[in-house]
Image 1 (cartoon, rainbow, N blue to C red):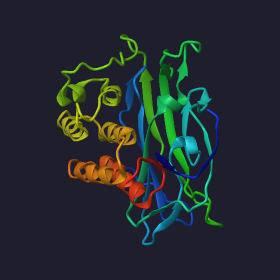
Image 2: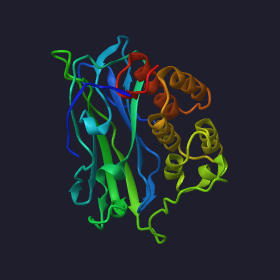
Image 3: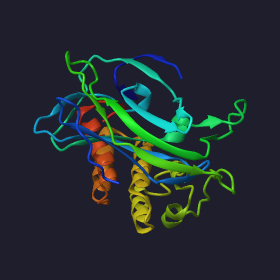
Length: 279
């Protein structure tokens, strides 16, 4: 297995028009899968950079939040929340990805993973949550990896608002699905995101999940996050993974799902920002 990133030094632990960065043709978009959540639910975010210019944007940064180039901010009644999660420090020797005109590069994430806290810090199984209340969120992206001298494009997204309410039923069960689960059952479940990570492609195909989510009227952000999650978890050679991505690309008309597939196709073709299991 090879990681196409750089040299690891340390590891320390809806469409809205947005003004592009000054001197750049990049614009940033932040979307959430819902506007209202119950405590314990995942809060799924889709962050995208779009090249609205006529030239290729070079040296595009690695958008995994742990790398530090993508910074999501969440503010509540008491002020801005502290961000947790892992942090990577990398040394880069090659320029970042090139983003073609009209191209989209994105990342999906669960805000609970980055801003949630644990009621019992000594219990590793205690789920992270965010308190009930009103919140706003926005993203700031340092768009350049930093290999090209003089390029320092910073883009800020639109701001979105969401509410978390106390759940009378407590946190989602996160239960492991039974062998009989079907795509339509997963699509209708409030635990759909968790279930999608607990069941393999051989038992439940990603394409079937996407179609079931669309039929059930679920958010395209949820579908995009599930596709992104399952691509990351897929242990497969690059050529086979490219073929699998092409088959997914014909399934969804939703912009967010297509952007995830486009982003991964670009990573694979330019051989950057992913774990490679060979060709």
